[in-house]
Length: 368
Image 1 (cartoon, rainbow, N blue to C red):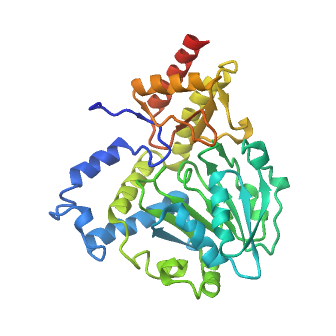
Image 2 (image 1 turned 90 degrees about the vertical axis):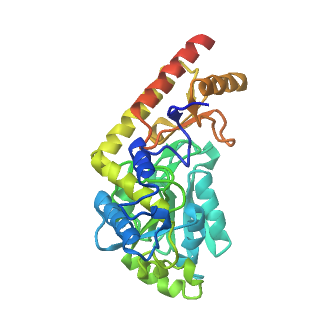
């Protein structure tokens, strides 16, 4: 055990900025001189509502979201969105198009399969999800109920590099951005709906961000009219995400994390910082002469999740054991890929990535 901060590479819930944690600690018992924690305030009261609406406005400001979209603060994580999407958007006369790039897009499609017809316009499964399909190879039609993609694949360490051509698709475009939203600038106008669990880049687990175009929101009124109220996007939009009791502390932490992003240069600065961090680790992989092998094809590499394997299971186990002794946490690879994974979301420091790089180099020298 240690009394110091360690190098946290967990995939989620993930690292939070130390400044945000210190602020939460200082305000935990007495928020803004009210004599109560934010967790104790009524979600109908002025103290919480100021946090709630500031969070929504900061989301809009950082992402440059126009008035053509609504921003919702929901619960249930991306997993609940896997069901809310087809409940609200998949009519009996249409099919939903899922672009398969990893386990999470597979799970999203499987959930939709319970509620209507789906198909896959592209899949990287045969190549063990090592790369994002080339845009020209993705099949879509104007009759698709919606086209769903997962922007960053935490398990496989791949990511969509460019969203500029999504505007060519004629059906609504939906994206699960749980693991890379707010890590880089984003052309929101090329999407009709974006959803993301907060526990990677923008806060703790418990709150889910949904960005939905008002045009698409209007369409859901017809498709989802028989759906329980709590599962309708329109319900939450009408009530400004206060239809039911929101996860007040998680929203408060999200607000503070968004403030931290803004104070540290916004999304352009986050992107530059994340590229530099990822570059340190990919250099260690590429310069290892095959000792470390990256899972993702270089053209599809994620700046959020760096996945790699070692020459043997024995060396992998030794690597993880030695890493733990040096106070690196969360480097185990997912069981479906094996090896190792470093999740380097916004709050992970460059110093932590450099420390991991140095450890990788020294471990390689010791075990060649």
